[in-house]
Amino acid sequence: FNDRETQSSVKDIGTVYAFSIPFLFIGLILFIRDLWRDLRDKQISARMPILLWLIAALGVAVLSWPAVHRMNLVFFPIILLIAYGVHAVWLKSNVVFAVIVLVYLGLFVRFEKVYFTEYAEEVGSFFFESYTDAVGYAYKHADASHTLYVSDNLNQPYIHVLFITKYDVREYISTVDIPSRNDAFHILTSFGRFVFAVQT
Image (cartoon, rainbow, N blue to C red):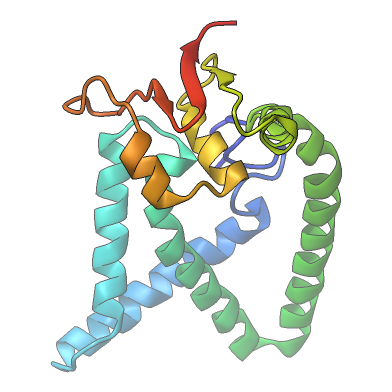
């Protein structure tokens, strides 16, 4: 589950540990077995919504370009199925279960180390870390009468401005200039004292 997109998952770790894959398949087999027993015995099963959720999520994943943010709906049933598999191991052997817990703890520590060091440096530029810092600095130090010109060399820069300045919603609504409100994505040219559409 690594789509090689920096913003989607941590390099060489992905969104689900590879160690979990056997438990996913064990969980899926046991889950379907238990669901079949429920249906055979004509019982209302809480497993059915999870199965339907998984099928729907996989359907969405198949119909869209593979990327974690487009198929993240699939991870909830996958996590439940992995837990189902790990639970089955726990019922069979407490010793093996303890080893599994230790492995997961080790993987989590590795994830934390990479996430807060290498990955933080790598992904910062994707989320325009310095851009929001610059906007915040300009907003804080510029005179209230000054117009602030903001580069739009990134997608929808006004989102960053609204976020970093905690801009007043009423003022935004009363001053925003959107040339074409029928477009799928609104392109703002200005609001308040911020002016966009400035190529740098």
